[in-house]
Structures are given as structure tokens and as C-alpha cells.
Image (cartoon, rainbow, N blue to C red):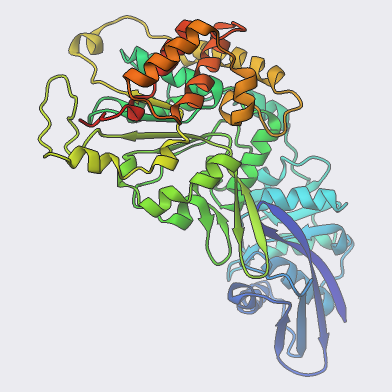
Length: 513
């Protein structure tokens, strides 16, 4: 007999429906065809053990399982459940009252017939609804994630027996539903860290507010213990709340990477990723023989924090240059290519020198001549060119730490950031893929960031006296435009330019002495 079920394969952040055809006929042996990898082929043993556990039998005849289309590579163990149900139907051990072909079925079987959670559930659910399937049968632990998609019956099952009884009509499993919008809006700003907990460092808070308002990348330079990491962790709390579209996009990436965990649902707060400096190139930007999203894609719509930037491998940092410009990662293989979104804010921190105390107000630097410059040279000019704000962080004094003055809450800062972003949204209406000041190309900077004669003289003087490089010119104009937006002013004033100029520390000639 012949049976047909439907599963799905995930490529990049999108899913493709896979048809699983099973026939049982004369002969011997079990055959799996359709470009399946080792994990898929091993399903024979898991399926056989699961069926025996519930007193079903694996046919002792010729069983052929075809995964179509045959030219697409199938990977992973999530095809166990549709293969098992196909075997049962084709061997006449399952007489379905519900049509198997109306459902996408996915799940990894354990040897006792229980279902283990799988990766990539959300893109599969979106594709199932798009292709007109009635429902999605999957492990119970993944059901909350799939329920984000409406107009699709999400059937969570714990064992293969639950799935069999559901299709035979012996068990009525109610589809899981969730109010996605209510869930999303209730947890949009649920951040643990808040700027209200930070004493002092007002100049750094101001710089991060400007970065959040314009989508600018930031590098913080300061000695150990000055609060660089603490401040960076609080940045997501002042970014504008995610839209529902951004939340779905972010959840898809985390689902594909298997980072959501069991019984997870929509990612409603902006992600904050902080990889260790020993990370490989592929883990940072994505890749592998079967490409998976890297840290820069996992921080999509959020913040990527690189602590101790000079300690990262040079090659790992250099592969970030293109994603920082294009806001996406393209990974090509011989026969196909995948694309992962990577629209993130880069926040980096570093010590000013190997010992950490160069330019420290109290402690003396013990690094030898030329050591500081060599340390800074680990960061290439092209990468530094993509960072708009260079901020020097100084340690907080004892008086500031023990002061009881209430600090401004993240919520108050976020309101100003949202107002500035609204101004930019109106400014770039109709612009192709430009949503913030940081994304402006050079030609647009000349049109949008117009300065008067006094501002031009100030900028010329600053570039000459401070030894600012030519690449600092556009960056200063973009940042000053953001400062003006925060103030709600149409024209860039001289004070906006003056503030922007001070955020270019590393562009000064002989900064490292």
C-alpha cells in the first residue's frame, strides 16, 4: 500500500514543504531515498523501537520511504514522526479518520515513543499556513511556539500513540491557541536591567542615548571596572519597542538556531548577544556545512556586544564588515545559498592598552613604548570606520557611587529615543531600506545634514587641531543630526556639532601617545 504525509525542511530562515511517501510491498529491507543525511536515515531504528513499544510492528517486507523533492538535502531527526505514521498507514495498522495529508507533521522520536522538541518550528508553521494546510502536528513542547501563527490548528502530542489516536479519531486534541498581540504587548519592555541602577557616568548614558536614537554603533574605551559592560547591557532597555513584524522575524531566527528552549513563545524584547572573544568566524557570522545563523543574526533587531574587542581574532572581526553595511549575511555553497538578516547595533568595549590603565586619572600605565599603539592597531581602520561614536569611559568616584541621587529611568530615556526615531521615520519615508540616521549613505548625508557657515568653520578647525581623519567627517554630521533630532530641532546647530566632535576619540592623531 501507499501512504503520503507532509513534513518540512528549513533553509536559512524559511521553510520548504517536504512530501514523505511510503510504500510497503514484496521483498525485503528498508530503503530511504531523497537525499537524506545520516540523522534522517537513522530514523529507521527509532521508528522501529517506538512502534514496538506500543505493540505495533515494523513490516518485514520491502519498505521504501521517499523524501521529495529529491534534489533538496534533508537534515536532522525531525522526520521520525511523519515517517512512522506513513509506515503505519501503508502497512494498514493505521486507519485514519482524519486525513494525514491535511497536516504538516514533524517530531523526533525517542525509543519509548515519546516526542522530543525540534528546531525551526515557527518558519515551518508559517509555511504550513501559507500552503493551505489545516494543521500542524508536532511535539507538545514546541506547540506554544507554533501557536504564534493563527489560522492553523496546532496539535501538540507527547507520544506517537497520541498522534495515532488523534488521526484515528479516538482522541480529541484541542488545537492550542494564543493571543499573540496581547502576549507581545504585555512583555515588550520587560527588561531586567535599567539605567536607574547606574550611579554617575552621565556622559556615557548620553552617548548611548544618542546611539539608540540614531542606530549608531559605539565603541567604549576605558580601564577595567569602569562600567563598560554594565552600561552596554542596559542599552536594549532604551531602544524603541519592537514591532510585531520585528518580533516574528527575530523569533524565526532564534527558532532555526534552536535557541528558544522548550515551551517558548514570541521573542518580544530586543536581543542582547555577548559572544566570548574566542569565537570562530563561522559562529560569529553564521555558516557550517549546513548553514546556521551566527551571533550577528541572533542579535538581529537588537544589540551585539563585543567585550575586549582587540582580543577577538582579526579574521572574525573583518568578516563583520560587509554585514555591518548590508544588514544581512549571505552564505554560499556549491549548489545553493542562504541569507540571514543581520540588522543589529554593534557595541564594543576595550581597554586603552594591555595593562588597562593608559590615560587613567589615578593609576599609572606600565606598558612600554609603542605597546599601546600596537594594541590599538589590532582593530582595523575599515572596521573602526563603521563605528560612529568613540566614547572614553572613566571610573566612577566614591562620592558618585555612594550618592543617593535618583538616576533617570530607562523608560524616560526611551521616550526621547522614540520621539527622535519618529522624526527619522518621517524623514526617510520612501527611502529604500533606510530607517535611521546611521544608515544614510554619503550622498544623503550632504542633502540631510546641512550646516551653516559657523558650523563649517568649527568642523574645519576641529579636524585640523584634533587631527581628525577624513572618515570622521560624515560620522560627525550623522551624529550631530541625531543630537538635533533628540532636541526636536530641524537645523543642526553649532552646539550639536561640538558635542558630536567629542565622540571621535580614536580618530585623533597620536591618541595613543
